[in-house]
Amino acid sequence: MKKLIAAALVAGMVFSVSSMSLYAEEGGPLVMATSAEFPPYEYHDGDEIVGIDAEVAAAIADELGMTLEIQDMAFDSILAAVQSGKADMGVAGMTVTEDRLKNVNFTDTYAEAAQVIIVQEGSEIAGPDDLEGKVVGVQLGTTGDLYCDDVNPRSVERYNKGFEAVQALLQGKIDAVVIDREPAKVFVEENEGLEIVDEAFTEEEYAIAIAKDNTELVDKVNDALATFKESGELQEIIDKYI
Ligand code: GLN
Image (cartoon, rainbow, N blue to C red; front, side, top):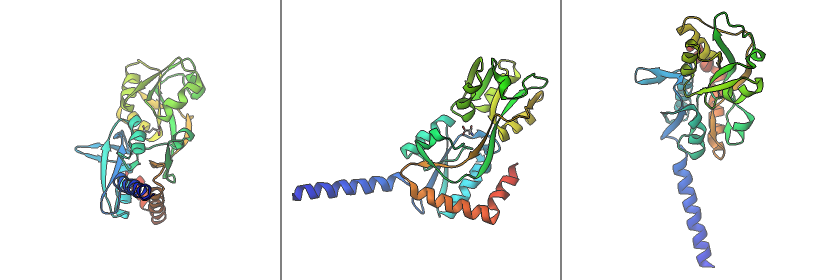
């Protein structure tokens, strides 16, 4: 009996030690996983990763008395990093979806978003239905990728980075790109001969992804977001970039 209790105590200790090291604590680093190829939410400026998400995350870290650490990776690796505890939160213009909610928690939303269609100027594609039978480029693992099959395209070409899909469109290799509205605006501005179709592909909302069992951090981040919404700080950050 004594042995059993001792074993249970050790198991309990191991559990608390591992949960301590798995999740961020005040004074320590708050690790954000992102994919910094997504202007104006996250992108490289010299050696730095900047953008709306980077600034919102830094403000959250500050509010929690922590230091923000950014880990840059492919978009489709972010949820795994969050689930495994490699990162505390995924902040990457990430759309809340039913499927993702099965694997992670999402905080309250902090931005309205949409998937839009980019085409070459003068294209006959005027809305999502016109993508039927067309070759459509998307960024791997994004909602554009997940929802594209619904419109029966001829094929879906998947790229690691959004701008690679835009490059393929410029070269005439694909007929359209489905991607988030704000990065789409940046890509169209930077490249001549492209336009965004008026009718959006989907309407979405962005939130921060956190591990299923780390509800403590979800609550803390929600409190921080509520504070920034009320103080106007969130809007100030958004206005700096959009
Ligand atoms: N909002 C899209 C998604 O969540 C794309 C995000 C991104 O590419 N960073 O799938």
